[in-house]
Image (cartoon, rainbow, N blue to C red; front, side, top):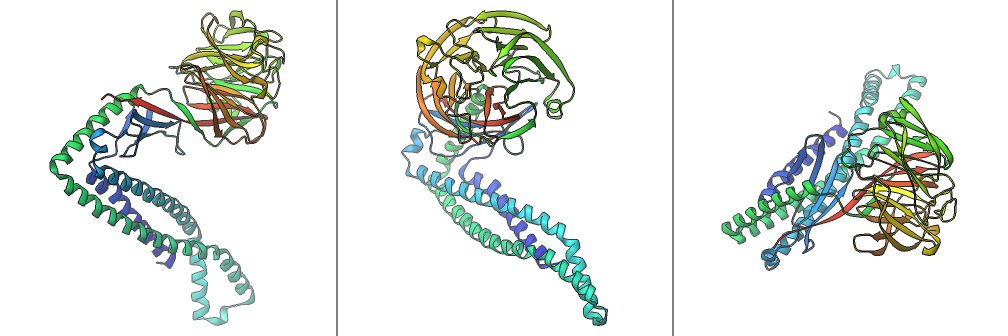
Amino acid sequence: MSVPMLKIGAVLSTMAMVTNWMSQTLPSLVGLNGTVISSEGTHERIVSGLYPGSEEGWQVYSTASDPDGRCVCTVVAPARNLCKRDPRSRQLRLLTEQVQNVSQSMEVVDLRTSRDLQYVRDSEPLLRGVDGRLHTYVANPRTLTAKGLQELKGQMSQLRPLLSVVEQYRLDLQTLATLRQELLNLSITLTAIQEEIGAYDYEELQQRVLLLETRLHSCMNKLGCGRLTAVSSPITVRASGSRFGSWMTDAMIPSSDSRVWSMDGYYKGRRVLEYRTMGDFTKGQNFVQHLLPHPWAGTGHVVYNGSLYYNKHQSNILVQYHFRSRSVLLLRSLSGAGYNNTFPYSWGGSSDIDLMADEMGLWAVYTSIPNAGNIMVSRLDSRSLEVLRSWDTGFPKRSAGEAFMICGTLYVTNSHLAGAKVHFAYHTNSSTYEYTDIPFHNQYSHISMMDYNPRERALYTWNNGHQVLYNVTLFHVIRSDG
């Protein structure tokens, strides 16, 4: 076996041993075991531990998906009175943080090792070929010709990158040796703490953890809303259409509707393309066309419960168009709302009225002259389009790049161009606002539509002729009793 392969074997063997210790021995020492909750059709990973948390309740960070496409929630448990009085609790939390740091380091090494292992495997035929040639030339030097020497040099130059891979293995072995020592020290410390706590306290702690896990699982089943804390890297689904437009799926919860709709342009458009699935939309196939009886203005359209809601061209009239019946169900004026580029977003495009949906229902974002150009948020009845309640956010609409609703909170970006951030948030449940600093990558430098879909926990954007998705991370506090 070659030297690189021996080093790979050593790395993988050590990784397996350390990972097994982390997953089995360490949780049992502190009385915590990882729990995976899954239900039919969904996948959810719960990461929990003795982290310092809010005294008010469980803190939960959820995101639409990880790189493997799984839904992820990270849970931070509150400090309890019994543990807060015990200095050993703080020691346990510090040790847990150390374990988390070690785990992250191991993940980095594991990913790098997997990547380099594949590189070595791909290089193995070439390595064997060079080895065979060298044996031939050593056994019979007369067979070495100028052409053969040139070919051998070429093969050796192709193998030169293996030197850096082997050097990285050497460094990774040193890193793993350090991690093994750290884990050994943690094991000794945790064992000492367990013995100090004693059997009675330890069993009580286990019972408390089981009880809290049960309550957590119950809460997680009801978990819905949260506060935006991060936006993922962009995922380009397709490049189609003009610079401006909108695309969407049904935002109604619950809904099994898998259709995707696309509306190209912002001025006097009538043609809506309906695709059966996201896969069909990506490939541009299997679609039907709807020709709207009234042209649209802007890109602030939304599909909710099988109907398209949009702003009629050169008016403040809202239109409800039902896809299956191909008919207009409702027309209603949004009283006082500006239109025809009176109060658009910063990019213009007749974006005066922006319709959107979240976990709470249907919303309209607009402004009017009495509101001095500040963004108004109105909750709408989806059946009548009647305004149920309105809020004046105080944020000038012309200074906003785009806006979207999540869990009753309006989030506003400070630009539609590169370098944009989620800059402002208005909470309708408390009628309060705050300035935020949540960056996101505006990959194609001109966003003309940005809407949240509560079914998928994702932001849909139309960016300079590209249809782009962003996953979002939400922060939750689940109130606990006692």
